[in-house]
Each structure stands twice: as C-alpha cells, then as structure tokens.
Image (tube, rainbow, N blue to C red):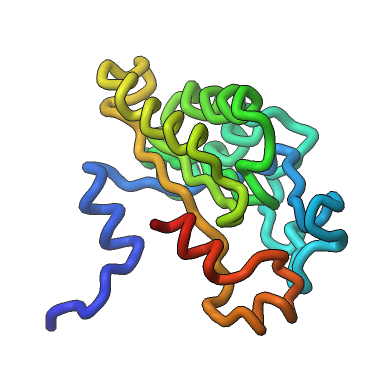
Length: 183
C-alpha cells in the first residue's frame, strides 16, 4: 500500500546511506519568552527537564554530551551515526559567533553527521540561515569525521496555527511569524 505521507524515518533513510540517531544536547540556551525579552516563565508546557535524557546536562560541553550519548546508544546500535540535536529551549537564541562555536564543535565529534536545531520561528535570522547554507557549501571536502557534507535541519516549534491558542499558551508570537520563518 502506498504511504500517504512522508514520515521522518522514511525521509531520513532516503537522505543518508546509514542509520542515524539523534543525540540530545542542552547547550545552555534560554528563550525570549523566559528571559524577559518577550515574557517570563515560558510557554505553559515548557519543562525541558521532562524530555532531556540522563546524559544531557547543560554543565557539560557539547562534545561530552555527544560522547555520553554515543556511549548510551552504541550498546544497541554499534554501527550507528549521529545527529547532534540541539533541543532544549531556543537553540538559535545567542550571537552568531557563539552559535558557530557550538555547532562546529558538534560537527567535529566523530560519528556526528549532522545537526538538528530546535528553535522558535521568531529567533532565526538571515545571518544564521546564510551560515547554515555556508556549512553545507564549505564542507564539500568534509572533515575526516564525515563521509559527506553534514545534514542540517532546523526544527521550528510552530505549536499551533491558531492565534488564540498561541496566546493562551503564552507563546509570544502569532502564526504569521511561523509562516514567515518557514517561507
């Protein structure tokens, strides 16, 4: 039977010639809806501790979190490659120079073949998008840890297309913001 949608597992298998696992990283970010720029307290469901795995601690370096995550998954999948998953809070909410340091550190870890960057649609700049394209273009000759240019994915937390819902959950932006970011 023909599949009527393109789920992530199927899509990722078409992109890469090997199995990959996301390794969650807490790089110490915050959010404009927590630090006072847009609000405080975050969205009503905001509790990153509830989904951070045991190896994921913001007081550890990106490299250390990735190494501990690799050790965790290696037992089950010894030939697995990995995607560094910047998940906790808003992983584009910092200066571009700081983001570059973190993302490049992740890509330098052996076995890491890409980045998944979780963020809000109101926290991605043109400069950051240009940099992410640059990663792909300048890594035509990938570092020794990569077989090919890295896979780069931006995961927007759209949360809802309904402005009333976004207001009720204390999101701090409307759906038009999400639409602009995606376009």
